[in-house]
Image 1 (cartoon, rainbow, N blue to C red):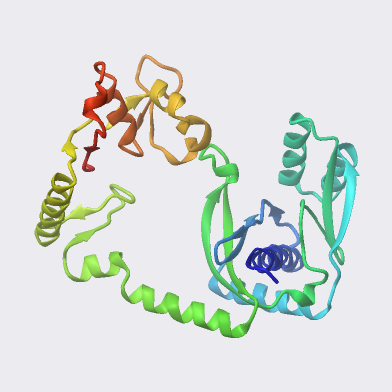
Image 2: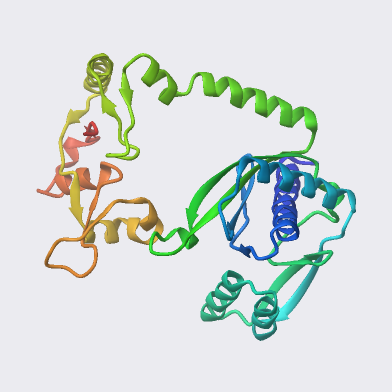
Length: 306
């Protein structure tokens, strides 16, 4: 089996594990509304709209129920339905998020939708999946986090359950051990212990640098400048906030709109500026300030972050 085939097989198993997770949740919490459940680099996740927040003990119950479902060796059965029948199915199942997804597909021109059934559980899904639940192998539920429906902060916050899954118990244990070691070297942990920097709710995700940490930053900047000067770069500085026109032109609006910090000025009804997620767009604007001669190439510009 080629690496590509092995990767596809693992991805299918992880995808199937997400379905088993959703099935287990509905058995334990029948009023739960289902969001989406894709695979990720080390496993899978599924978004749920629970009646109340999950507790750590709930996660253990869900994992236990998943193992019960896996032992039943239930087959994954694919069905194709018309959009109309798909909407009716999930309305009958009282799953409004699935109905919304099907309506989105209908707007895109889709006439049919595919679903997968395992026992009494049905989910909107293109697949592929393993043949039966028994093929869902070594897994563990990892953590719970918040996630807005469709990644939009205007929508409801759902609870996202993450799971880790591998083909063998040995691979799973190796991964878990690696993650434990990584926690010991977590920059957030080390930064706080050594009084280099810390995070605060006043600026989520943006560190407060302390005196010791700033010494490191200065040395890194110095090293960066030495390398870039040696390689023939000139240093520039561009604005931190640029107009929407720049991001429309670069493609950020189409592909990364959910991941950039948008700004709405008082004279606008919608966002019209954004904090730059990268430096290259500003560098291109500098490049375009005048005509360039071929003698200037290669032209290397470098810019440090804030």
